[in-house]
Image 1 (cartoon, rainbow, N blue to C red):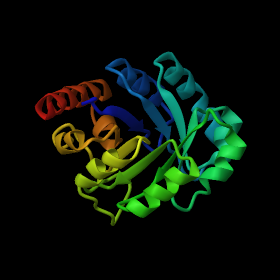
Image 2 (cartoon, helix red, strand yellow):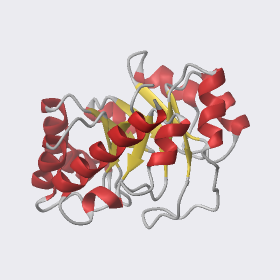
Image 3 (cartoon, rainbow, N blue to C red):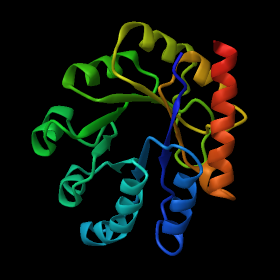
Image 4 (cartoon, rainbow, N blue to C red):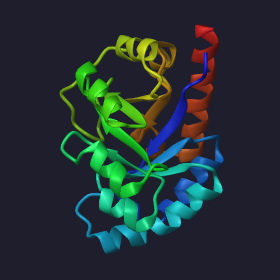
Length: 210
């Protein structure tokens, strides 16, 4: 069994000393992807804030994914985009961004939406929220078995999201989440210590699952 990898989502405020905090988080252990998630900023300002964070991610071999905006993804040359159900079409995004771009899709607790995303050419599907989240409200509450079902049928990686902490991630790792998308549990407190705690928890769960 392959251990789950970390997919870290930014807080909404990425100004100030946030680049220092991101550097600390990525320096504490491997992080597969970082999602740049800001709201209500114009593209110029978003691109300005993204620039130093992209550089940090590149230095740690961490994919830089933009939340929601295909246009911003293309403008800054990000590694990919994460689309919610109302953020656009995977096929259109692929045409604009090219074959190399990583395109992920929020699928809530829906097998149907996930299969549709896969058929459209998504590079990963995201299920959640598995636990109550302070970052983003969601009425969808899938069971970990959804991850196991997906793994048994499809090659496309799945991401578990929503209120995930080092204390509760074990069942999701065991169920087969390729990635754990985490935000508050990294940025509340010491990001380096929190990332290290996630790595310990993932390793322990992977060992238990055999």
